[in-house]
Amino acid sequence: MWATSRRDLAVAGGVMAWIATILLVDSIDAADRFEVTRQVVLGVATWALLVTLLRRESPLVRAQTALVVVFATCVEYTFSPLLQAYTYRIGTVPLYVPPGHGLVYFAALAIGRSTVAHRYARPLVAATVVVGGAWAAYGMFAAPRQDLLGAFWFACLLGFLAWGPSRALYVGAFVVVSWLELIGTSRGTWAWARVDPVLGVIGQGNPPSGAAGGYGWFDLYAMLLAPWLLARLSRLRGGWASGGSLRGGSVAQQRQDLVVEQAVGRQRVPAERPVLAVE
Image 1: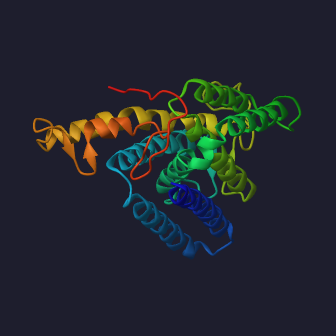
Image 2: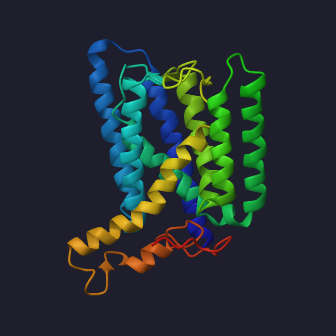
């Protein structure tokens, strides 16, 4: 159990290091003729890392990660090049961003299902609330540009921590997403507009303080829809009538694995609270 937990934390740390490296390489000045090549290389390498990490995971984790990639990519192209709530240095969504969202989810999942996260769940949740709350308060009352969006997203994060299917997952998301946003904006890879483009009245920090709360919606949708998606695929393969067998386990087992407090893949960790049943 502890060996698996150490592996999960090592994977999360490795993903965060990869994120920092990609953003650093992307921010280095280069001639225009090399830009396309750089974006393709970074995109292919990030996809390769994501696929490699998912090869040893259960079908449920793969489905959750795929759903996060799909949802996040749709949001990226809607709110960046279309609405310009934030803009990337290259003028459009970099090729490494879609698989990067999958890595962010997987890193948060790895943190959330680790034994350490469960053993110290209460202090970790408390630390997340305190740090996130202080950051949101700074954005609202002391930052050079008022960050109403960050405060709203922090309220979403509080909701996920209180009622979401996995507190530990959202603690992990807070760590990984905050790391991602701070590095990306500081390196100039992307920049948030001062005011939201939809209503035109909501101030946005650069980055918004509670970005992890906004990202938490991707996690929630993925966890709720993945079992349904696997069941549909099982029916298409004709496995439903014969007992719902799936590669890596039955549909019932995949649903039990939905909450990261329970086992994912080969790990068995006691749940910190009752398991959410998703039908």
